[in-house]
Length: 132
Image 1: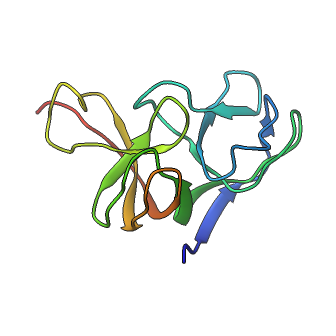
Image 2: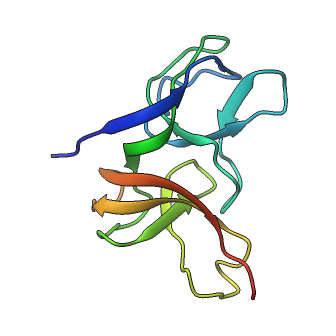
């Protein structure tokens, strides 16, 4: 059973589009004043995980610290580092510097795994895979 314990969330930003089906996905700043958008580029910086499902223009709660549920884009196992795929779902990020992961942002550490399209639980963290 997936659980959450978000210790800090941003609640003042508004959705730039309808987020009805995007709860527990990674979001980013949209570039417009005080708005957020679903992550749409593989490995990009994620502000946090959307905790609710606001309509366009409504405020949303974005978890940035603590444990959060997140939608898995592939099988996730406890101990995996994860970041956003191009749909805002959690994907495994290889912490070894590889062509596939170089430049990816890590936004969580899996503490309860999940299968594809199921809810995993991550500890929210922030790292970037870079060459030494």
